[in-house]
Structures are given as structure tokens and as C-alpha cells.
Length: 451
Image 1: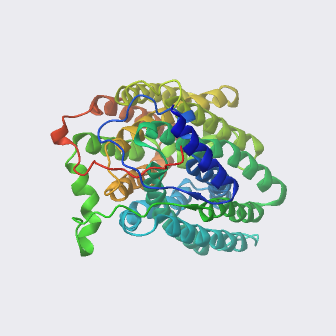
Image 2 (image 1 turned 60 degrees about the vertical axis):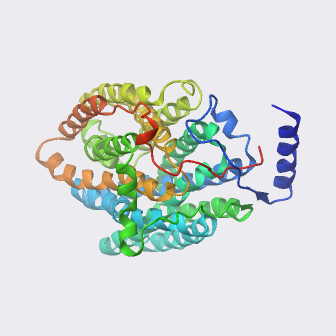
């Protein structure tokens, strides 16, 4: 590293100390990232660092709320079908409205959009706390507010995903994606433990108030940074046709299309167990869904997810992401099969960690492969499809899985998901394609200059 880069980094750190960090636009060579891209490299960017930590603390509150909502839904009705409805209310908007979020992410100031959406989420979390305060909460009102929260997530998700590559140079994108997955999954470890503890100690309303307060971290982080404006695609469609731009763009790149198909099918067929975790715990493992033991089981799943996602930006940072995707799919299938046949709590805790590790090693390497193919002018619209697949397809799988679980068993659904993962391992050939098949407009990608 040259002396000029050291001076730039020192100046950026000084700006961070003054409470305001500026991310400036910089030209980055087109093509695949240069060797490097570790998690440590990504953390050297002060803008990325601040947003990363703010998002991490906010995600802890989000997972506190999510785990308690699933347990509350099952406790109120003792029905896996209602749990499926709750999951759909949480995540269904990601399937229905993510394309709107992607268009907004490519056309408006991403920082202001994220602040506005997050502030709305804060208010809705407080409304949710008020709804669940009575002994018999109104189930319709509960589902309606959770759906409104999901609408906010449908806008937040593509916007945040499009923002991430602006915070680092392309050569460090793999490390940034890995860290982003890691913070999401570290919060998956911490959030359920805190949520389950607070739920058992003082009830669900306190958990939702805690989530509302956690939004202040990401709002505060965004208020203290400035980001480049979105790179406008002047060839984008007009009117309602713009909502289909993501599909049209993705179809022009073989790797992007296979990434998205893999994600959609995997989320639909292999991940219903995530939304049905309370049912899995109670029926297969005899763990009460509102106990500390349930929180620990969920945390073990999250610990594995942290390890799996972080490994992509550390141990495997110089390996082929395309090959890791296929290997991780096979490993996930084996881990999920083992988890499905367990009937006692003891071995279930390490099994949950193994499922989480293989699941998120696959997702993180798949996300890195996809992000490396995209230019900032189209990133929001294509990443909206990723959000649809990663979050939006899961509730559809849960709606389908609920009645199947009632008619057969949780084990049947999990084994079917494992078989699907094996099939996807043969489909997911994601090796780099000739330049002619790549997306257009790959040239300059804005990045943080404070390195």
C-alpha cells in the first residue's frame, strides 16, 4: 500500500471522528475483482464500517421480534398453518413489492430512502407492541401490522443491497458481502436469545419495544454519512414497464440468471423449516417453542450461519465462489437430512449449527457471484429479484408446507428440501461466462474513497 493511500485513509478516519463521513465516487476497473476482497479489507473503509455496525445492531432487534412473532403465532393457535400465515405476512411483501423497492433504489437518494423507511419501521414496531399487550391479541390486526412491516422491508432490502457495493471498491466486494451476511447471522444468534429471554421474563410487548429502539442505530449511522447519488440508467424503461427491467436485465447474463433461479427454487423448496422452526422444535425435538431452550436452538442455527458466511470472506476468500456454491448445496442436503431424522434435543443443537453453516456458506457465495456481475446502474433492480427470492419466496414455501406438515410430518418436508438441494447442485454451474454474455454497463462503479 502506497503512502498516498495511507494519507487518504488517515484523512477519512479524521472525518469519521468529526461525526461525518463522505463516500465519494471513484472509477473502478471493469471486470472480475482483483485478488483480495477479504473481510478485513472491507472493514478498512470507514463508511462501510459505520453502516455495517449500525445495521448489525438494528438487525439484532429485528431478529428479537421475528423469533418471538413465530413463537407467539404458534402459542396463540397451536397451528402450523397460522405460523405459515404469520411468516407470509412478514416476508410476503418481499415477493410482491421488492421490484418497486429496486426501482426506487436506482432512482432516488438511497440514504434518505433508508432513513425514511427505517423510521416508519420504528413506529410500526411500537404499534405491534400495543396490539400484543392484551391477553388475547386481535389476530387480524396482528397480521395487518406485520404485513405493513414487511412492506417496509420490501423497500429497505433492495435499497440496502444496492448501497453495499458503493461503500467499497470492487476488489473488496467479496469481503463486504461476507461481512454483511455475517452481521445478519450474528444478529440471528444474539437476537433470538435476547428475544426468548425477554419474552419469558416480561412478555412479547417488551421485545417489540426493544426492536423499535434498535432502529435508532442504523438511523444514526446513516445520518452521519454522505453517499454518492445513484448512477442513473438513462436507458431504463418508463412507466409500469420499469418493474420488469430486473427480469430483462438478468436474462441477458447466464450467471445472473442461474444465480436467481437457484435462489428462488432453494428458498421455495429447501427453506420452509426456517419459518416452521417452532413446529420443528415442539414436534420433532420436544422443545417448548417459548422456552429459553428454543432460543438456544435458534441461536445454534445462527452460530453456524455466522461461521458459514464469514468463511466466504476469510478461509475461502480466494477460492472459486461458483464451486463453493455447488459444494455447499451438497453439504446442506446432508446436514438437513440428519437434522430431519433427529428426535432428541441433545444432538439437535450441533445439527442446527451445521445446517446454518452450510446454508449460509451457499447463500453468501451465491450472493458474491451475483454482485460481481452487476453494475451500479442496474444493481437495485436486479438485487430486488434477489430479495424476492431470498425473503419473498420463503413465505410461499411455508404456506405450501403448512398443510403438508399437518397431513404428513415436519420430517417429510425437510427431506424433500434436502433432495431439492442435491438437484440444484447439478444445475448451479456459475463459472464466469465470456464477456459477450455479461450484463452491459459494467464500467464505473462508485466506491468509498476513504480507504
